Length: 201
Image (cartoon, rainbow, N blue to C red):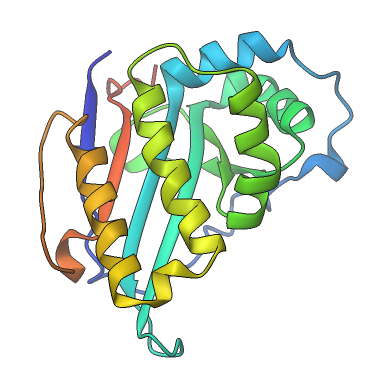
């Protein structure tokens, strides 16, 4: 399936979780066997997503928050696959997603947003079992951004500009190219992910 680049706007209402959905589930609550790591690497090649968003943040000294995110989203009837990925990699949580207003099947999403978990769990896994498709190039850019955040390079102007440059390079692998030389809150996310039909397959 073709890849697309989605751009999120920061002009949104505060997040409120749908009370009908179950709370996120982590590895501590899952009692399943791990998956073959080579299978997971191939699965990420097809269904994985790496994104970096930049938002204004009132309480941070820099006034800007950079949020990396790795995720895999599937139909809810394939939820067990995501649970076994959590067990195998050793981090992340699974969230229920409702798309009732679109008439789609319910989905489940595996997500890792902690820069520490990305560095200590996800990156060693993907370095040992490397991706094979063009998404590997996106992963390498994503990895560099996260490691810069972990070493606090993003707090300096030069480091922040480098992250913007790397994020624009991520966008080159999307169907739509949205390049920004300077931070713009209306164009704050570089999301490389697979497009899906309205049926959610």
